[in-house]
Image (cartoon, rainbow, N blue to C red; front, side):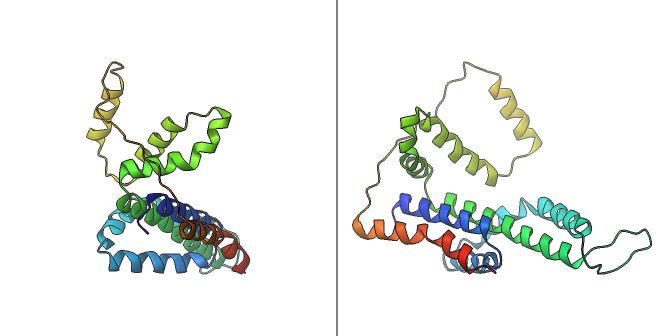
Length: 204
């Protein structure tokens, strides 16, 4: 699968499946870990997941102690985790990690210009509604890149300072391409698009 458009559609289908999935998220986690290991990209997803470790930790702590249900242990100060809270916390944590891994693998396996071109091609029907899909595609791609890039406070201040210069020239040029889909590729798109419905049907 070398077509960037196919890769993007597959990743979007995974994102939707993970968002609506339940136990299937554990399967997706195993699949992406296996893919990363066989393609020497394990370090990439580890770095990406480490950047959201505090979000995951806070999510687990808050959900575990605030979800009503059967109490696991009773503490002297009256705050106690529940089995339902722990289950819900692990579910949301795995889903968040899965989403981060998909974004990481997608941006690592698709070149920036190709990704913007693929997003642009998918959003072309919105031109009927006079939407500025060129700007949206570029901003979405750059946002996905910044999600993975570790940014320090110093970098953030420099970026804010650069935004104050309204006359600052843009040195980045993006070349848009159009990716054609053959019959077998269209068949693959159809099968991939059914993945979220399959996940929704199979989950208990």
